Image (cartoon, rainbow, N blue to C red; front, side, top):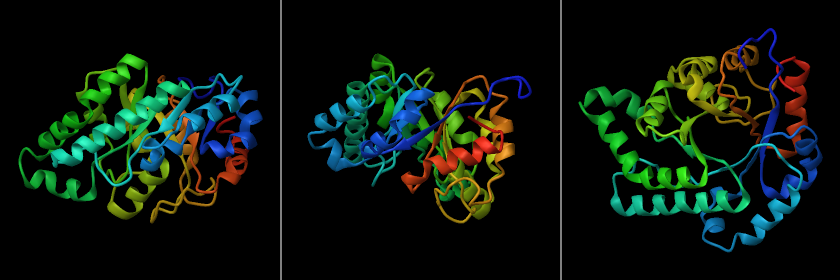
Length: 277
């Protein structure tokens, strides 16, 4: 996506649990859309026998040639935990997620950013805090990054509470690995803009630049994490896609809705607006 006037419109993908694959299979395969499987966020799935789930996913995706990823685990922890015992659990979860990627042929795993509003207001209050935080993330993720490099999976760090959109970029760059890149969640960015003084969503795209390889598309009101269909919130979609059109990194554009039954509604909105296909 380099010349907005001449480049083809980007193709939308979607995030969903495996139980929704049958419903959207034809839509995914007909245009070979990118897909993100979201079952592997749960500890009970990762700690259990998930091989039948993986087999179901592979069966449903026979003929699918779009890019496949998963949302990695995140519930109950942060990747820059200072507690070494908790860190061991987080390391385990990251490796379990990568095991699932390898089994189903996924090439991307979403990881949640550790940065909070508290960090934004306090890193400058204590010299060295940012460096300490990055060091703790490396202590947690270095082994996972090495494994990701071995199996061809890219870890994409998604903004959650991030006020400064540059922090995740600097964190990703600190690994000096092609297998660590950046993700943007439009609703999270819009929440940060509306509630914590962060810049608008398109600024997150510009700040990420070609480190951006994944986008969660959801609409919101700037107050909460809504995961609404496009058009139900207040995100300025034209500005977001205009910023995306300047990139050459070809990020996966993943519709991530709370109501998985409305993926077609969200896609139709962006298609009718002339922003995607």
